[in-house]
Amino acid sequence: MQKLKGIAVSPGVAIGEALVMDNEGFRIPRRFVSRDAVEDELDRLDKAITAASEEIARSRDAVSKELGDKYGAIFEAHRQMLEDRGLRGELEEMIRQRHYSPEYAVSRTLRRYAQVFQQKAEGQTLAERAYDIFDVEKRLLRNLLGSSREGITRLTSPVLVLAHNLTPGETAKLDRDFVKGFVTEVGGPGGHTAILAEGMGIPAVVGTGPFLTEVSGGELVIIDGDQGLVVLHPDEETIARYRHEVEEHLSLAARLETLRDLPGETADGTRIELMANIEFPHEVDHCADRGADGVGLYRTEFLYLNAETEPDEEVHFEAYSQVVRAMTGRPITIRTFDLGADKVPHLPAPEDERNPFLGLRSIRLALRNVPMFRRQLRAALRASAFGKVRIMFPLISTVLEFRKAKMVLCDVMEDLEEREVAFDPDVPVGMMVEVPSAVMMIDQFVEEVDFLSIGTNDLIQYTLAVDRSNKDVVGLYNAADPAVLKLISMTVEAGLRKSVPVSLCGQMSGNPTYTMLLLGMGLRQLSMTPSAIYEVKKVCRSVTIEQCEAVARRAMSMENARTIESFLRGELKRHVPELGL
Image (cartoon, rainbow, N blue to C red; front, side, top):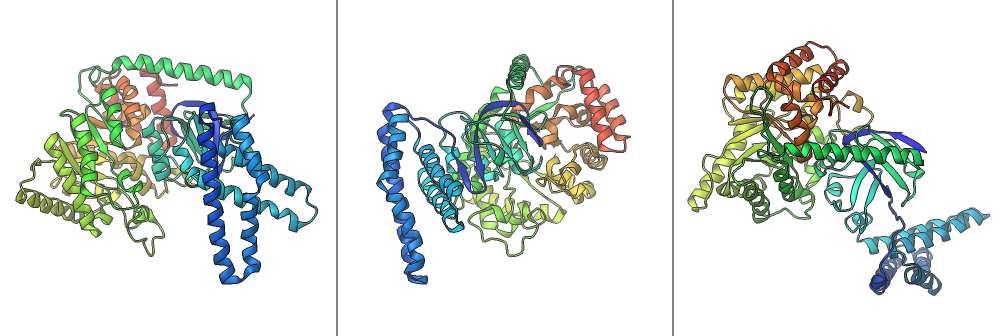
């Protein structure tokens, strides 16, 4: 048994078979196909072999023309290997007789061939033939799976994904019906991949360091998203203990579900709005299931991450109006796209983007690409005709930046009025508070905005100068740092002075450890992943504002994050024992 320590980014425990992805793509776990699907799978294999053979032939011809037949012969050898009757017969036998999937049959057979060369060959030249076999395997798997990583969208049974890294786009494409958790060797707690995992409600651990060579596809793995642990090759005692923990999680979830229709209010009757953060339109169902008071943050990046070309206005409108209609009168806060230029496929790659977090991103990118920005704003305004929509701009760092963004919005409103397109002319317009400069100028901002939303994920990063996705400095990334807490307090106090609503929508809001602190600081609206609503509501209904204010005063007097975190965990355990584990 081997235990790996990483960073917990989404709570819960998952036990299941590993689907291993390394830098070179998939290592295929053993998978079976049903008897009545065998002929279809054989046909799929045949088509993949034909397509791969044609690709190799094109490479052979191109290399021969450029470098000569001697070099093209390398690819011809690959093609002949692929067309070998013996290989094809062995693959077909494994599918027909053993009901293996074509992917597993290919991977198992060709890797066995490669091992023969690696283990038996006496000379370096012959041993290197194993790499030729690996190349053929990868090419054939790409044709079977669609691409080296698209297989994660074509699963047929539950798996735990183990990868060196997952991009936000890859994470967004995970098949939620079958991916029950994931682990990555790199990454940090505030990265977009971690945020997506939390939104999906599946256990996830990132930043474990190298481990993929220690596990094979299909082996049993345990992901402990509460403690940030990954257990490889677990023994029976460990499996039994974690299965008991899963049952306890389910039991607690069942007890908390009784809170669904109860209001989010403190024990002394102060109303707390508990909103939901969502990544995709279909998550609106989870909001309703959890009794969310609305959507406090509708991230719109998925529209760009999954698209080869820029999504048009109708694509935006459908995504927004679907959520607005489903929330039946409850408020929806649509945040304009919060991406760097390096993450938007249809835009030119930045020429000198050495640090994307400090580069052309979010509102800066929107103001540099006004036609794209206008399309999104038009769709959001049109959706406002069907319910309570609020529009929010991300990464605002100067007052002038906010004014420029609002001018574009006003221009779009005028255009819609001229065309007699229905929208809410009084749609509230707000901003994310996620850089220190915004807090330093907060007294000016409250004169300009209709509402504020504190984005702690970025606020922590920019305040503490810590790349939130870098495991090497992740120990410095801490929501309880006194500097971060002071910036949050300054923002809340400024909003209270001018009666401007202030919410908090970072990962901090969904962690019950911080709930009493945030309420004590004066926040009355929190927005979180739908899965976190019950736990936060439980804390709210178990404490009074007076108790929360006492906790906030004590925490704000402390000088380091570790002491503050320890204190907050102790207070949670004292007031809400069920959650203070």
